[in-house]
Amino acid sequence: MNDADVSKQIQQMVRFIRQEAEEKANEISVSAEEEFNIEKLQLVEAEKKKIRQDEYSMQLNASRIKVLQAQDDLINSMKEAASKELLNVSHHHHTYKPLLKDLIVQSLLRLKEPSVLLRCRKDDVHLVESVLNSAKEEYAKKAQVHAPEIIVDHIHLPPAPSHHNAHGPSCSGGVVLASRDGKIVFENTLDARLDVVFRKKLPEQALTIVACLRGEDLFLHGDRDLVARTYYFKSTTEYTKEPIWSNCCIMVERVLYLPYYAVGRFNLSRV
Image (cartoon, rainbow, N blue to C red; front, top):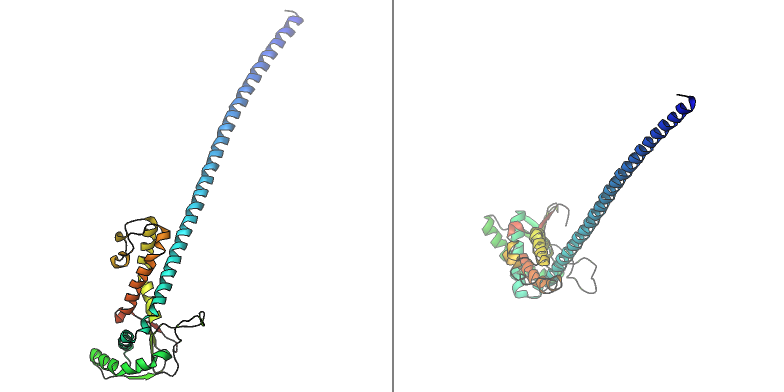
């Protein structure tokens, strides 16, 4: 075999090796492209899923915030309506006078002091003084102690809210009793009792409102008395009308008839 044949054979071998290398390189390139596209597609789908989840979470949180805001607005409206209704209590002296006596007796039962200071609104002083003796006797009989000394303070509770003093301190009625040294103060005003009612019944109020907003059967939630007058209201628009009035009436009833062990607020500062 001469040199020309050897050179020709070598060139053929080189072309064959080069062709195989090019084919292998193409296979690697195509495989890498496919793997890249698959990985890219997976990453894109994962990001899309994450974005959808984020959007859903944002919408869900926004909906929850709206529900909580609507719930808070309704509860505040209910409490405001109940506060306005409480103002009518002190206007009817034939019912307000015995109520004042009961409030004094309840406060005495909580304080259990032989001598107390009593503070009331200026407009209620004559009513309070007219029931003091009967309140002392009733307390003494119930507690089986001597009748306490009750001193009506010359400093009065704020007057009832009015248009002229809409943002100032106000009191819907009731009394505040304190020990003679002023270290123990027991608030038994109608406003304090309303706060107690709402604190005790707030979870049931929340369940009732949420159930109303969802159109559920309200008898499955909370106090039957509280929801009995609202079961037929299914939408937010309807619910914001009549049920507030119905529930605030029930709240007012509870304010007036709270048992003595559940009423008022102790305040360890001076009256």
